Length: 219
Length: 198
Image (cartoon, rainbow over all chains, first blue to last red; front, side):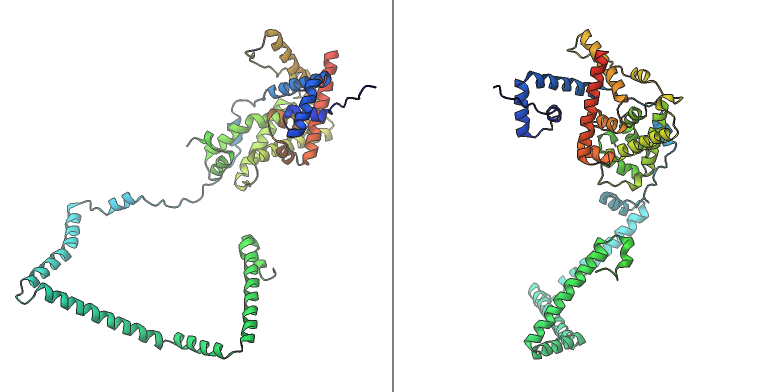
C-alpha cells in the first residue's frame, strides 16, 4: 500500500514565497517543495504572480498635482519666533566701544581704581615706620577681629529668633509624648502623604490640562 | 535643509511649523502611491485624481493635529482608502455602474495603461512579450476583485506594507488581512488560468 502524500496547503506555500513562514515550518515546507513536482510547480506559479504584481506600475496624476493641492491647503502658522540668543562672541563684541569717546570713557573707568590703588601703595611704602612685617601683623589682626564679630553676630541672631524658640519647644514637646502615640501619628502622616501624592499624580501630572477641573472628584 | 533626507515624521513636524516646502515634500513622496491605490479602486483616472487631491487636502489641512505615534503612511493611506471606498459606495447608491460612468474606462482600456517600459537585461524578446501579456491580464483580473481585496493586494505587493500596517489602514483584524490577500491571490490565479484557456 502506498503512503499518502500530504501536500502543504496553498496558504503555507504562499507564506513560503512571501518569506513569512516561521523558520522551522519554512524548512519543512521548502524541503517538501524541492521533492514534490506538484508543489514545486505551484510555488513557481506563485513566484511569477507575485513578481508580476510587484511590477505593476504606479499610475501617476497629471503634472501640477502638487500645485493644485497646495491651492487648497492652509499652511500651518509658524509658532511665534522667540528671539534667538546671540552667540557669546557676538555679545562680547557688543561690549567693545565703537568710537573714540567710548574708548576714552572705558579707559577712565578701568584705569581709575588701578591708579588710585597704585598711588596708595606708593604713599604707604614711602612712610618711614611702615615695614612688611608691620603690615602683615596689622592685616592679621584686622581679619581676626572681623571674623570674631561675624561669629558673635550669627550666634546671637540664631538664638534670638522665634523659629529657634519654636524648634526648641517642639523638641521638648516630642520628648514628652508617649512613643506609641508618636508611632501612630507618624504612620497616619505617612499614609496621608502617600494618598496625597497619588491624588496629585493622577490629577495634576497624568491628567491632561483641560481635565484638571475634576481634581476635587478624582481619587 | 535637504528635506529628502528626513523621515516622514520630521518632515511632518516641519510642515506643522509652517514650512511650505515640507508640504510639497510630503506630496512628492506620496502622490504616486496614493493616486495608484485610489486609481486601482475606482478605475477612473479623473475621479482618482479628484479623490487623491481630496485626500491630500484633508491630510495636509490637519497636519498640526497629526499624532506622531501613528505612522504617517498609515494615516494617508487610510484616508485615501476610505475616500475611495466612500466614492464607490456613493456610485452604488446612485445605481450607476462603474463602467457606465461617463469618465470610466473599460477594463481593457484601463489595462492599456500597463506598459512595462524596459526590457530586463536577462530577458529575451519573447519573455518580454510574455511579461507584457501577463501584466495586462493581471491588470484586468485585478480590476475584477472586490475593493477590499484590491486594497490589500496593492498595499502588500505594490507598496510593500506589512500586514500590521495594512490592518491599521483598512481597520480590520490582522487575520482578516491575511484572508483577503489569500483569497485575492486565489481569484487572480483562477482568472489568469481562465484567460489563458480562452
